[in-house]
Image (cartoon, rainbow, N blue to C red; front, top):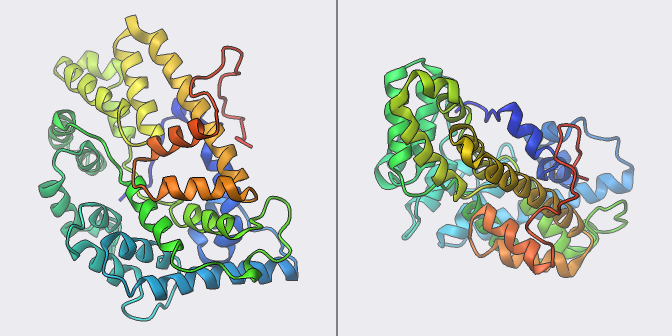
Length: 361
């Protein structure tokens, strides 16, 4: 699967969002266990001997979680173990991402999330997305627009306009949009409950690093799901651009239907994309959609700050882990966290618009 590409306008709108803060809070774990996350956060800082020891302890905690949780038969826990195992190289057979995610996918009542996280289990670029996982999703999650947006992205990359339009129509006909982040996070959050972090994971913590057991759990869960697979929404934005629609009038209705689904979808970025398309294609409601987009940026920015604070605020960490374990969507988790902490979900009138230079910290 191609890396997710977010249109520049949405980058600007959501720049004050969660990515910078998440990358920062995930740095200690990523330095130990996940080069992919570390690359998101930028060059790893030089660590003191004490910091390195704590990083290694957090890494060991994550490794131990995999070994213990792998003994379970529940698909949520197995999925959590698989995601926690993914950063580790040379895992023992049966404790690796492939084996554990396959067990999760074939467990009773597994649902579609385990197949979704296997989409990028590929031998080569030509083998992506994973054919078996993708076929399962097209058959068993056909009412999820996210599946057809993946198909749309594949067609766009191959410059197959007919297949891209067909995928757009299927996405527009779908009733929901779910990238399964909330369900994947729930599996990881549940998995972290199985073992308590040892004291050496917080010994000498400073500068906003997790200084309590639940803070360590938040760090591990947020870090492990940082690179969760997301559909590339750029082909949707390109196909539904007002100039593109002017050339292909038959796509306008499909674009508006899909935009409505995205606005009520699982993630803040999906909602922002849906609102952007609606504002573009329905000028009469542009002001309303623009305000809703500012609200999304505000929500993500405030949530990011709370998640950062959870590393050193045990009550907030405990609250977040409980909410994350419920298995709702990413957007529902954001809104629930804000409401539980008495943060308004509408941007205040005097809030500065999100800009590409905002750090979110």
